[in-house]
Image 1 (cartoon, rainbow, N blue to C red):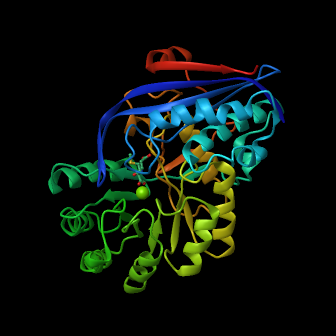
Image 2 (cartoon, rainbow, N blue to C red):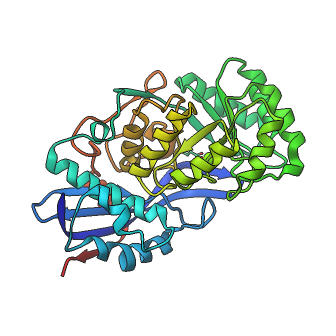
Image 3 (cartoon, protein in one colour):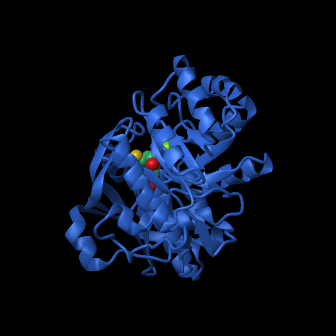
Amino acid sequence: MSEFVALELRLVHLPLVSPFRTSFGVEIEKECILVRAETASGSVGWGECVAAVDPGFSDEFNAAAWIVMRDHLVPQLLSAVVTAEEVGARLANVRGHRMSKAALEMAVLDAELHERGESLRSYLGGEKDRVEVGVSVGIPASVEALVAQVAGYVEEGYRKVKLKIEPGFDVEPVGAVRAAFPETPLSADANAAYSLADVEVFRALDAFDLLMIEQPLSHEDLIEHAKLQRELHTPICLDESIRSAADARAALELGACGIVNIKQGRVGGLLESRRIHDLARQEGIPVWCGGMLETGIGRAANLALASLPGFTLPGDTSSSSRYFPRDLTEPFVAQDGTMAVPQGPGLGVEPDPPRLEEATVEVERIEAR
Ligand code: SMG
Ligand code: MG
């Protein structure tokens, strides 16, 4: 339980090592909002908002997230004694904006856990010291370039390679990678780029022994995913379509997927993520931790989440060097396809002050009155 005296929003820009292209757009530079929460007793907590510059992955984007946090969410957390568990209910009068709410919950939780001296992993009920990780490969210029890139990642030891697909770049590239790497656990992520009329594409992908096909159809759909799933052997994994535990329950009841990708930002926070994990586990559905090209702050939260027992498939949490020439925190490094779960209080990491200053393009401090 903490009393918050100030919350600071920071817009940061970090160069990416290479552009990341998906079916909905390309990201050349990482831009995100960090939240710094300060309690009356002097503890500090950090949160990272997974929204991007454009409303491509979802309807959330940074400029809107900044306003909704500053004007509608942050004021409700200041001058009050709140626990992380209460953040969701306290912010429920604002509809949607889950990525913003998740960032604030993360900062509140980090501060609270620092006050208690407890790690996020322990708080969430994580059981693993290291978690299996994979890598997500953007759409490249050619199939040859893709195969070469995958070769490097396989060499690095990643336990799963996820290929981004879109209409016109699907069966051929996935087939080429499968032929070059017959043993590598592979998946394909369409980011909602197809419709049921494309069923033949998925029948063809079905032949490549993929671990899963991620979000083939509309970001708001469950029913058509259930229809498609009945046509395929490969499990469908839902990402964009699952924004809450209620969505997950509906998806499982409908048979819309066999696997769930959990991203704390997409579902409104770590606590909702745990509810989805618990539900899926009860239903015998595997989950894994997705990624949103987070800096070290968000990646620390992902690793803690991925240490829960139902996360039985490798996550999209790759080494810092996969994303940034220089991360905001100490770099994360995968070894033999696994990554250590931070053990210190809260997230167990914090931004390096000079690095953070260098990356910051805007700061706004909102104080309790
Ligand atoms: O964090 O390594 C990462 C990115 C993983 O592919 C990834 N994320 O749909 O799962 C997904 C995408 C969404 C982010 S696109 C910028
Ligand atoms: Mg995805």
